[in-house]
Figure 1 (tube, rainbow, N blue to C red):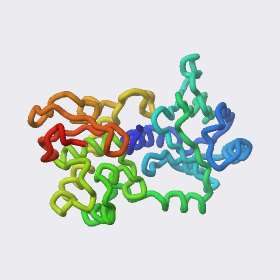
Figure 2: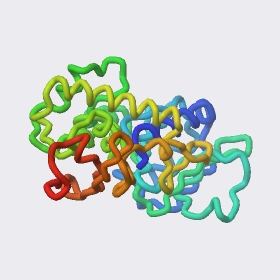
Figure 3: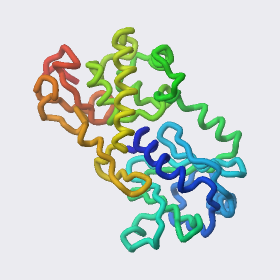
Length: 283
């Protein structure tokens, strides 16, 4: 967290507020979030620069600056990026990593409780290399079933793990991999090389459908995620398997199983709807 829908929500919130704004009065309180750039250079490049656009790549928020640099922020589990139109309260100031004045008394604030997020400052060449290591965007118009099957090709790893591999597919994490596999009725431990065309078609549609639905719901707030306006998402009320281990399946009322054996993360699934194994044989 946050995954594609959460970052997309933040970008849609912040784009109109930030585009055309000049950055000033920068305060970087926790430089340990920086990657491959010194604090001095980071502040020097940003100060006085203007934001030309705000976009998303995979799970990253990308601020394009008029100098051609990109400030790339990956919030990970506990980061949030919010515009404040007022002075920060003492509670707001807790865990602030970066605060940037953007004019009119407003400020852009990145907070990160556990500082698991990262910030890159990339020129055009570095950005081309950076984005080139990330897989295709699953909601792009050009991403069709053939492109999806190409993303899965050549791996014997569990299909859930392959879905979450950012080199193969951009933006899908644990929540939406669980949800998409349930919708597609696919065992999350099945090898990607065992996904035939019919199953791939179901999964392709499920991935796109669940990501779109989550965006419409402004993301999933399990704990720390906040939108670009500081609100909560609501897709947590629509989750069918994630976080529901031990509860009844919404389809067949079979008790949902949670395992960490597939990829070290919590995988919740219905052994009856998604697999032929009985509970004692499930991973």
